[in-house]
Amino acid sequence: MPAEPFNRRVEVLVAVVDSPDETALATQLLEGRGWSVRPWTPDTDAGGNREGDDEASAIGSGRLGLLVEVRLYGARFGAVQAALSEIENLARRHQAGMWVVDAVLIEHDLAHDYRTVFHAHRRLPERPHPMARVLAWRTMLGIVTPDGPGRCGCLWIRRRRR
Image (tube, rainbow, N blue to C red):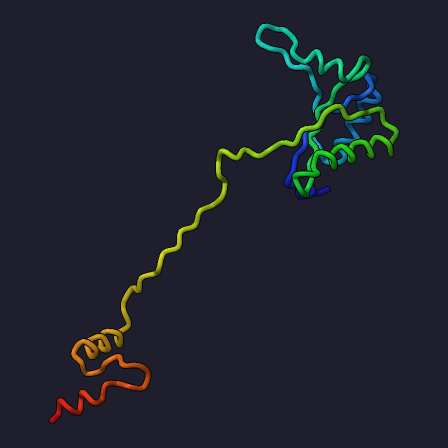
């Protein structure tokens, strides 16, 4: 099945009942939608102290955490709510034991501009048209004056012949 186009990504923390069957069912359902699923572990700092104790308690005892990257197409403002409703409807339809704990919109790195810059330059003629040189000399010598359309400066030519 080809992947659908997306322009928004939402990272969702999903709590799943801590049993192999429920975890496998939830992973299969979420990956079946084309979303990436990986196990979640609470963060630890450099000293080995757990920073995620409050997050682990938010999941609850007897549950595992899964990080799901939901890919959506649409507006930025409703992306998080759309991801939540997609997962909740999927759990309700298949009666899976999974609950959404937290969701965050993944923003693009705006420090680097990935747009392509085009520069337009006027093309110089490789060789001027031969008639252009003749017209330039005629104008410079006063044989033909650029008086406007249909007026070639014939009065000056007549005066010169006299």
